[in-house]
Amino acid sequence: MGYENKEKQKEIAEYQKKYGKEYRKRNRDKIREYLLKNRERDKKRKREWWLKDLMEKPWKTSFRDARARCMESKHQAYRYYGAKGIQFKMTMQDFEHLWFRDNAFMMDRPSIDRRDSTEHYELNNCRFLELSTNSRRTV
Image 1 (cartoon, helix red, strand yellow):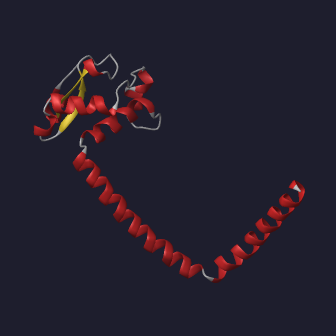
Image 2 (image 1 turned 135 degrees about the vertical axis):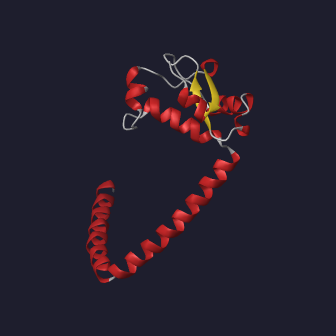
Image 3 (image 1 turned 45 degrees about the vertical axis):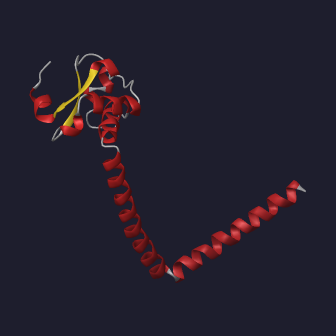
């Protein structure tokens, strides 16, 4: 019985492959129009979701960026963080706690800072500073 199902599945797959190609050839313009229309709609939805999310939880951007610097080897700043052994040991709740502890919501451009630049991203080693202050800071 299992053998019959596999044969049937192969037959269906071949049919879909053959007639799918023909359908795509005949309706190329309709498909392109449909995809473009949906792409615009999806971009708008994504943009609206992102803005809403950012308004509700503004520390998420800092969290994602700091995490990416330490964990994603394709990030442009990875060589200064993850490649040097800096680890990201914080949760989203830790970032939220820091955000309110340091009154980052009152700052024009808050940025995450590590007090000791040789240590990891940990709750007791991080704080939010104004970007201009953080930029001037040296080791």
